[in-house]
Structure formats: C-alpha cells, structure tokens
Length: 282
Image (cartoon, rainbow, N blue to C red):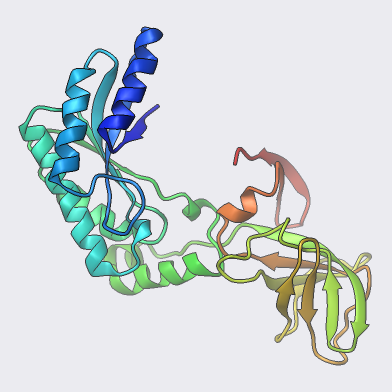
C-alpha cells in the first residue's frame, strides 16, 4: 500500500498516527499542477514536505513520486508537468531522500498514458526506477471520452498502431422499454442512478425483443435526449419497430461513474449467457 503526500501537515498527521501504532507507512510524494488538484506546486512546498518526511523516518518511508496528468487537457501542459515530475524525482534522488529501491515513478490516467510512458521510460533519475502506469479504463473502455482519447493515441503513436488491434468497449447497461407514448419517443428504465451521464449520455447499441433469437443493432438515429433519476428519453423514428417490453443495451461514456452504481456486474459470453459475476468496490 502506498499513500500520497503533498504537504508537511499531511506528513505530521500520518507520522503521529502511525507512531502510536508502532507501524510504518509507505508514501509517494505527489507533484501537482497550478490550477490542478493535489500535489506540490513549487520548491517551497517540496522542501517543507521532504523536511517533514525526514523528521518521521521511523514511521514514513518515501518510496517514490506520483503525478496525475489527467487534471490537464492540453498536451504541452501535460508534457511540462511530466518533465517537472522527472526533475523532482531526480532532485530527491540526488538528495538521497528515497527509502526504497527501485524508486517508484508513477502516472497516467487513461487518456495520456502514451506520453507518460514515453517520458517516464526515458527518464534518468540517478538510480534504478520502477515505472508504474495507472490507466484503468483500458480494461473496459467506452464509446465517448476514452474512445476520443484512444483515437488521438493511435493517430500520434506508432507503437500503439503497431499493436495491430484496438481497445474495445466491454460495458453495456440494459434497460426495458417502459412506454412508447409518442410516435418518436420511447421511455426506457435507464436513469442517472444506473449509468454515467457526465461525459455524454449513454448510446443505444443493441435491441432485443423477448422471444427473439438474439439482439440486433439498433436503427441509425436512436438517441437518448434526456436522463432523469430512473428513466431516459429515447428518440426513435416514426414507424421504428419498438414496443413496450423490448430491451435496449446502451454503451456508455466514462466507465468509472457507471461502475460506482452497481455492486455486482454480470459477465456475458458471445451468446449473452451469464458466465460470471464481478463484484465492484467503488
């Protein structure tokens, strides 16, 4: 287990807590960006934090440096932050601050992992390093924000293109059609309690009528126009074959905010048979 620290106040609180329990905590120093989230911003904060770590050597082990570049949205700013993170790591190595070998150097959400991998893998910090990429959405992917990010990676990175395949979305939320009150509108039992909506509304993908052999692709033009707590408004074309009791599968954008709404997720095979259950811990 590794905890992040970015201030002397944090270190003092952690040091006092673990001293009373005669335990040692592994930590990573976090580097942050101006107008970003957590993380040290400047040399003054860095010095104060490392000085506090030095006072609590018996309780806190500095094992490496961490950054989350996902708080930024443009490539130049992200590269600047990553290079500064390498500089900080090199400085701490030169000052012999680390209590672990190899030193951990970690970053990368699911949108800029190619740039993190390129910069960190080439980084010379003065001692052996262990590079950890923390992308999570690769395991699930989506049809929204991370599909856009992956498209950028494939366009810009020859190594990614050379793999010969791409990430595939693996999470869908199914809902029943509750009502078809108008010729171009259906109400489905999918709401904000069921799926993410912060990075775009879910996208209709598959249509199934109980008694049919298997689901089929939805007609072009089916679109969610609005989500409420437990319902969504599905725009269809007049004359489309949709009935109360039908089921619609939706692809999503931003998997994390869908995962946190489900304690258990069924795993399906290609025949739509449930073959496993995954428990979530969000």
